[in-house]
Image (cartoon, rainbow, N blue to C red; front, side):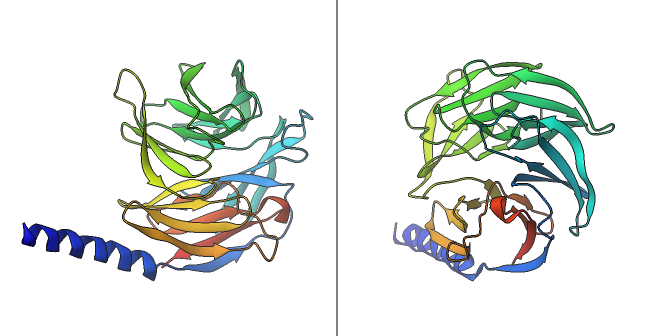
Length: 277
């Protein structure tokens, strides 16, 4: 029994020490050429950026998607136009899915054309998107404590619960969907007949972006400008905090291969990249 306790203690100490050693080092930042960049998505060599370009709930048709290189070079500023207030993004094969207030745009990445808008009946403020390996699309509704599921271009409620207070960041891994809320990361086992919310990491503070760093650690951002590494086994580690500079950190993206973190700065109108050491 004593040996098991010592082994568990050593494991927890190792995780804690690893978290404490993590730090973010800036690689580059684009000029402030965007219009309220809310979300970024990295796919091999291209970074997609959603631009709200107005109020987050304004159906003005001015929202657009930009394309950057992996090194921050603006490839196409207005690659896809005609959106309202685009936010979270997810990709499956050649399809890019973008939340757009009360609908999801499906974009063909090979042509840059909007194939269709998928309506989400009853939604109020769609935010983040996560896509499974099978092409199922999960969409969070920040104002309605709800996560929707899109399958075969048709939407339905996956789970609606009071625990999903200000649900935002989503991350899909295998048959588990992680959801960041106002203070907790919940995990939903998608292979269960009835989805249930199980607390995974608590006392996180508000979550905007949610990305996996290691098997035991997530990186989360909050809109006020703080980026943290969080784990079930250790206290949060603040990697970046732009609060005093009034610098935002919206829906982040993590390239786990290179441990590069991409941050859309919202009202800062730029995108920045950091390496996590």
